[in-house]
Image (cartoon, rainbow, N blue to C red; front, side):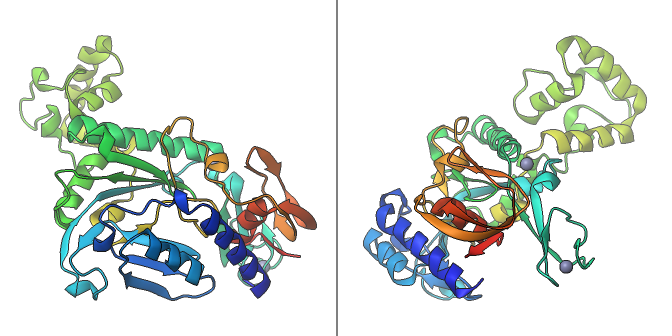
Length: 374
Ligand SMILES: [Zn+2]
Ligand SMILES: [Zn+2]
């Protein structure tokens, strides 16, 4: 990114942090957390920072004008010490749901590619249309369908957390990540002190991975039709029933089919069901108990959108509700083959053209490397 673009992004981010610091939620027990940040065009990750309060956090934003700010889900005795001397106490449970992991068919329609060899931008994501190079950097401008599909996963996750794991609804907070998905935080649960290994078992349960036929009534020898799950059962038994039997009236007939097809076929059915009804979270994120996460209220430099708490997930629209930058206009050279919508306004496509855009849209495109200050 060139100096003029960086200066523009820093100015826009700084204005946001100056005017909207009230949107930044300082985490509970601030002084036990590790903070970190990055600056534009610097590969360096400043980590192992500890802060006492809002005032110090505000100062960090104003002095450094970071591109991205992070905070640990873990609580430490010494958050600013090196990792092995921090003295880990406990960590909030966090889940990451990202549209890019959902294998959605719409994705190709809203992905642009930037050629690493000749900088050509196009919608061809296999090879450069100008020089045929396959070294492409892909930029997705997620659509409404991507966001809705991610919301479905968030709701599936909340159901498992509340119904199966007994977590209090008030302790689940859902945040838009600022780019393509959602982060789900669970506070004050019985899982706070759990290590990485136990969290990985929890992940398997939530994703419905590694289930064995016996748990769902199937046996290698002399299986019994009365041991198959039923609709009103709790947990995965009930969800399995709804998915496999479809309706109560079909249950008996389908059990007969399952018995006829035998044990190994049942295992395959179980694996398919797991793909369909398991919650699609990123397992590594939940298992990592030393990770730092984007700070709620801070801007995601991949988009210029804010990581935002979703109080009403159904109604939440990231392209209006997480778009906080101002609408002062600025002239850019835009090369974006994809149409997008921000603050209920349509933009693009732009074919290497000089145009005037409101700051929030200019930042969005510059962050995606699809425009530059003219
Ligand atoms: Zn090329
Ligand atoms: Zn999409």
